Image (cartoon, rainbow, N blue to C red; front, top):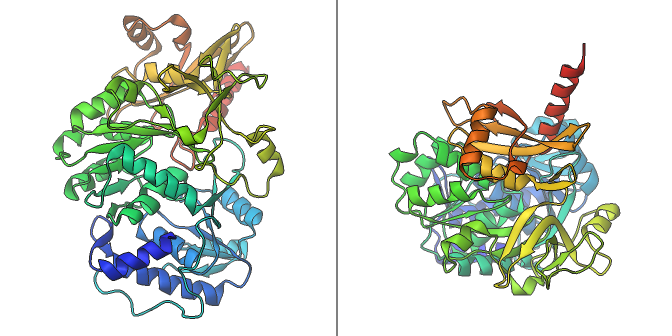
Amino acid sequence: MTLSAVVRRHAQERPGAPAFITGDDRIIWSAYDAWADRLAAELRRTGTGGDRVAVLLPDGPAVHAAYLAVERAGRVIVGVGPRAGAREIAHLVRLTGARTLVTDRPEIAAGLGLDTVDPVPARTGDPAPSGPDPTDPPDSGDPSDLWLLNSTSGTTGLPKCVMHDQQRWVAFHALAVAAGALGSDDVFMSVVPAPFGFGIWTAHVTPTLLGAPTVVMPRFDPDAALALMARKRVSVLAAVSTQFVMLLQAPTLAEHDLSHLRVLFTGGEMVPHARALEFEARTGCTVLQFYGSNETGALSRTTLDDPRDRRLRTAGRVIPSMQVRLLADDGTDVTATGGPGVAACRGPLNCLGYYGDAAANRDLYTADGWMRTGDVCTLDPDGYLTVVGRASDIIIRGGKNISAAQVEDEVATHPGVALAAAIALPDPVFGERVCVFVEAPPGGAGPDLDALRAHLADRGVGKELWPERLIVLDALPRASGGKIAKGALRDDLHRRLAAEASP
């Protein structure tokens, strides 16, 4: 069944049950169903310029109603991140050929010469008196059809556009249910932007397939999120590593009853071991992750049955159906020896490739059709995958390969560090040295370099992982998908170096 058909069924069988919950309101299944019908009818009247419809909305029920409406109108969703800049929006519109924009910011559509559809917020209570168009049944789609185009959350340059069908996310859903023992009695909360893969399965797919409610908020704020989690008795939270660390650092964490929280699904970047341990200790939940990307889906996962050390120090067991391989720099398969090598995969969770970008697809796939992750991994005899670092995120100091992710994990154990990002500092002698940008916790000033290095020495961390330059910021910049924008940090460092070199 398509997601549209599943929502229709919920509207008929459990019309008054909540589909989405916000701070002050809730959208019941019958209202969600009717809201999507109303928007779909408007899209049929307005959208005469092709089958691509861009959606630019803040996180909340409206973005999900819009996605459902585009599906019911027989079009393809172009999901634009709510924090996307004008340059990125224009690029996605040009690349996909979208002629219609569903948004609450009509000035953007006018500037791009697009038709505009207002999402018209639904109200609590009875659904709007609008039904499906009998000439265009909304539930006749095929889950293997192209359904969504969304952008990568890359840190530099213009984004690439990833092609999705629904069946990859239905397969992902089955793995998630088994990993976290998820059910219709759970209350979900996803603080990951909806257009991106992590946000799609945690807010638009899995809760719908289960018939469970999802708590959403227009923009992530740690204190507001904690208050919502406590008030709505959230049992399953989805947050990238950066976000759950921010929750952990929030001064109000101890004020809220989070006893209903069973599971935190995280990922998107290397999970900081010390922070995950602390989050479990302070909330009582179990931290789980899927390792993968918007393009690959998941290669491995942790589950409730995994020992804690394996859950928090590895990326979990490889998913058999994903046929994971580790490839050396020359393309040699080093899976049998456990790597290290760049992880590649081929299976039912893969996307359909990049839209309109043959060069990017050549980089994404090996010559024999395996999808590369760009992450350097190792594989132990029990089938657990460990991410060593990104192939493009390795600092090479005097010929020594240093994993930026490993540096970040160690630096983040300092109590004066909320978030950390390691990048290469150009050096005329060693080639590169380790530079770390850190975000201090609320009300803190962050450590100085000597104090941080002393802390790492006390932990027994090898000197090759010690930062050689430290820059403390009020907040680390984020890319569209919520990850740390390392491209912006590299630009910041280059500006600082240029200023220091000038007379």
